[in-house]
Length: 335
Image 1 (spheres, rainbow, N blue to C red):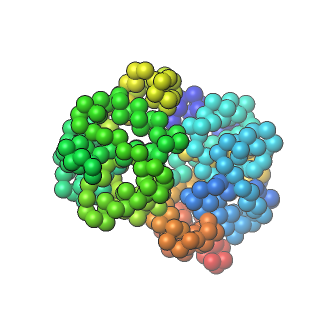
Image 2 (tube, helix red, strand yellow):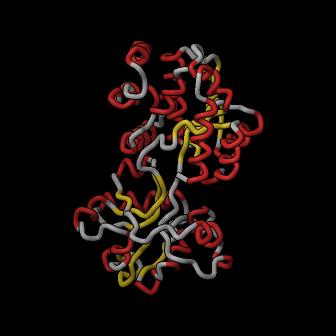
Image 3 (cartoon, rainbow, N blue to C red):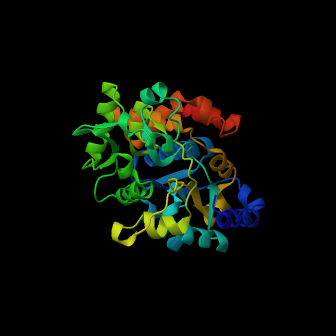
């Protein structure tokens, strides 16, 4: 975690702890239902647990990273952002925590998440020695390009996506063209997913960019490669790697920037939440479980609410660890 943010978080916990935080009735709570699948499910799980287990009156409100943060910061609503990817709002979030208007109750509500470069499980099993990005970069011959088998295919992001810039600049930073690689533009989200699905289903190698939690990673059990190269620092990343090529003349090698997701709440929620606060502090979805739930959502065209009930029914071994036994009993009775 960013050191400044960690210090601010610690200070705000001390400032807001105490009798008010253990109020008996959490009352009305508004939760942001972000516009992607994992966040939709998480918001609905939170709503069910708060309503059935803690007696809260919960309202789900539509959300997205920037708009939800701005509303929480400026209006104090919604009370909770269950899955806030903070790299996009790190500076203003740190400021809000320092001034006490917002608080991060959980700095890791999903494990094993983030962006990176992935291979298929079959390739990982066949080549256990190629277990880092840098080792794979030395073997383009194992990922033949469909139009020129003498070159290796690295599948990047579609043009227009932010990750298209970072992958293109990392391609240059690691001198991948000279090593024998071709950067493949999959053309669209469907093209990116299709290239991965085809490779896995045909038992062919695949090397490229993706992120987790997603249904694709869950469905195909893709392997994210670790980096030997350390992160190159914010100046290299923010002022070069994520910029267009004309603004990044000399990209330096770097691991992919670490993704941070927090569960963030307003100071008003902390005042009224009572024991429900402890739920958010303990609520961590294992990455494999979350990816499995996203597969369920995709294959069944399930809503976030559908997935929340499925999760609560199928994974009591996970969520009952987040709440006291009497609260878990109330939730089970309501299912």
